[in-house]
Length: 497
Image (cartoon, one colour):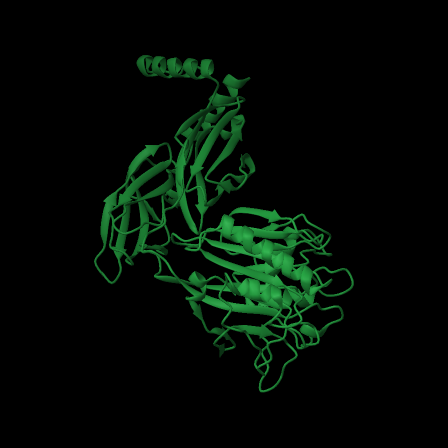
């Protein structure tokens, strides 16, 4: 039955009516750095008329003249051509044209572009927030607090009472900050501390409290550049100033034992301090830089619900404090940072969308968010896209499983995700450093022929792609029989079936 099915397929292919070539899909090996060559992949179906030439035409930046290179056939329907390296910040625009022997042609849309990457930006903005802004009766995040996060757009958050009544913690992060944010949630107590970050968290843990159930969560964040940021999220007890002082001394001991003073560090959270001269604050001031005091637009620096006490703090070390810049919100500037209260209307109100006027005063709202902004220098280096391995042109036999392992690798601090143009047959779980994806397919008789497949690996906003050709043929012994039959037919000059 497989022999007859394959003969029928060959007969159908032979009876095709010639037409213009069809460009099925394009892929690009990477978004290049300065002077890095780029491979352009193209899947071209011949539509019954043999392909004579495939050209990749391109222009660069303001250059009006067009250059072209001839793509070579990698296998089956897949052709590839390599564009030369270009200067940083150049814009390349390219299109692919396929020519058939019968004179017909087909071109891809002339909208494929990329910008050559230069060195990384000389600095990055980093907004750090201390946030105990749960509301309601469950000490969990609800819509008002989530809207405050969405409107103020912090990059790094020392978060307290890290619970969510409406779903999982991952769903809270996705809603309040974005699907590209990372988080660490401590396990200590019923209202744990945590850290949320725009950049990857590469280490994390907890320090147990000697006097309360709430442990202190810490995380190391892999900022762009060569200096890491350490964040300690704290929630000191209301029981007594003495207990708060004990915990402050314990935090100081752990910070000095675990983190270098040359790195960036911030201790942030709900300290429950009655005054700015408590013993706990004296301890924090002995190893942190607390000179800049955030205030609201009316000059109030208190942060509890009634705006009468300085409960919440964002405290950098000297290395980070030296890079403090004014906090800009709508588009007011606050030199020392901002205590945010949506209810304050004098001398003006700040309501960045989607925050609502009463969000900071809803029933059960704990405290006000406290923000400080920093401008961090980044060394002038260029990041690179992931490297893909294991994707090569392959042959698959009808009725037999084909399994390909595709490996993507990048720096150990980079989270990699993988995808495939044939998504139903591909699976991969995102991970750091190295990720392995599995492509599994058992072709049927109707799959006979060439199939172009693109694999993509992405990390830190950069992507790498490889296009391969998978040739589906009858099982091995049938193929050999058909090949012998074809040779016999050509020699005898007559049909043999």
